[in-house]
Image 1 (cartoon, rainbow, N blue to C red):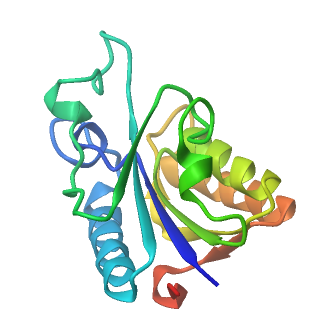
Image 2 (image 1 turned 135 degrees about the vertical axis):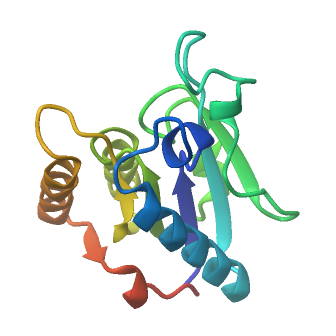
Length: 169
């Protein structure tokens, strides 16, 4: 079975100063480790990049829009304009129908949630990396928001595993 690693919105505006997500210091090394292990295993790797509006910190061409990790030869880059990385992008063509999908990145309640549910709806077995996603606080602690997303996705059929338990085929 093929593994596809979707590294969602691992962009400078959310992982590096001046305004990273509160968990950036812990989630960034997890994302780097997952990417390295996916590369070693020969998994299909898709970097997903959000394209914000001209007033957003991830507006195309701005420093915040840039990816934290370099896209290597053989890896894919998908630019998106919606929370669901499959919507209006070629992502579905890059993910083989029988592939297991591993999802990590930013932001838990937006793009991670929408992309995980879309992959599940396309018939993929989906795994969310518990320690590999994060968000900003918004009326409640960021960790609580991420935990609620994990509960919702688990109830929908997504596996939620720690990064140490993730394997790529």
